[in-house]
Structures are given as C-alpha cells and as structure tokens.
Image (tube, rainbow, N blue to C red):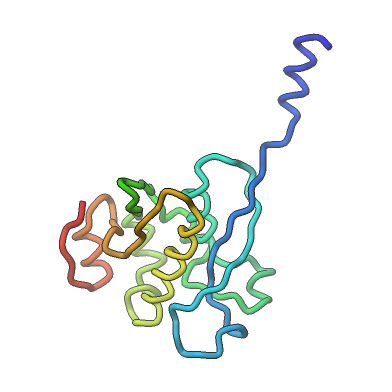
Length: 164
C-alpha cells in the first residue's frame, strides 16, 4: 500500500469513541424529596482525550430529548453547555472554573435560589466526576467563577473562604 493511500485512509477513520456517564435527577426513579439523588445516563463521545472536561460539557448540556422523555431532569440545558472554563486536578482535588457570564445567565437561578437546586447542581457534578481516576476530592468548596472562589460564593449566596 502506498504511503499516500495509508494517509488518506487514516484521515477517513472515525475518531475513537468512549462512553462516559453523566448524572441527572429523575422524577420517576426518585420517589423521595432528596434533591441530591441523581441517576446515571451513558453517553458516547467521539474522543478518548480530555474526558473529564468533555463529561462536564455533556452534563452541562442537560438531558437530551430522549433522556427527558425518560423523566430525567436538570437545571442544565443547551444554553448552559458553555459554562465550563476549565477543570484542573491538583493533588487529587478537582477545581472547576465556570464562566461567570454564562453561569449567571443560565445556572444561577436554578442552583442558588433553592436548596434543592443547589443540591442537584453539586450532586450532578460530583457524581459525574467520580468516574475518573486521579480525583480524590470533588467538593463545592473548589468551585470557581472566572478563576475566583469569592465570585462563586457571591453568585451562589454562600459563605466561604478562598481555597485556591
């Protein structure tokens, strides 16, 4: 086989795919009033690299129409899909940095205006990230907005100390 033909065939190959799990509330499965209970949904993504970031981006898209028809719900929806600025794991701690503008326009009302919304917000992120090795701690105290812990706390109307 010629070198050119090999290169052409390689370009035609589909990117590697990987299954990831994201977590949403489900009104049929959860018969309690505990808003921190979330359920797994498997999605297939077309890459094997940057999976933590991709998993969160998938989570922040919210349930698909098929998932929603199966009673999966979330404070996340298509407009919140761009809320993630960065995820960084330092010494096993996951630091999640949100885009302030997108966060305030899409997530803030659902996540900060009620205890239930806040519990769902944190539980969805924590459970989604638990599938990845190397993360020892995932906690809201490591959530940031535009690189600032203080901005996150002010936006969410919670008291906190700087952690980064």
